[in-house]
Image 1: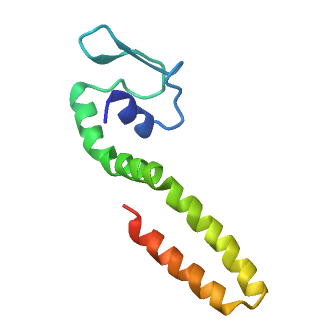
Image 2 (image 1 turned 120 degrees about the horizontal axis):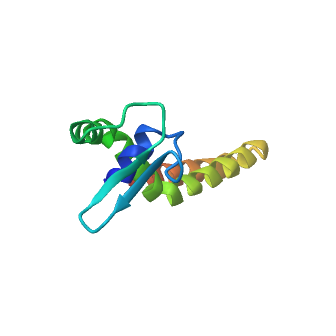
Length: 107
């Protein structure tokens, strides 16, 4: 997780183009401009925020990594609804088994 990720998660409504400007002159990224109605963070603040937002960052990364599985689960849900409408219990059982396997693959 880097400075941009920390600030993006900590201030989700702030623009990282206009409100908070990050620059890197070869010595690492730093806050060049702070144009939001909150005190500009110190290095200690940033280190504490990194710990604070870590669970949210991990959840975001897991969601991205698992996106194909979630898409497949959504499709199975749609097929399950169709199977229920057609009263196709065998097909529904097959879809539920497929969904269980996909859920097992989630991080």
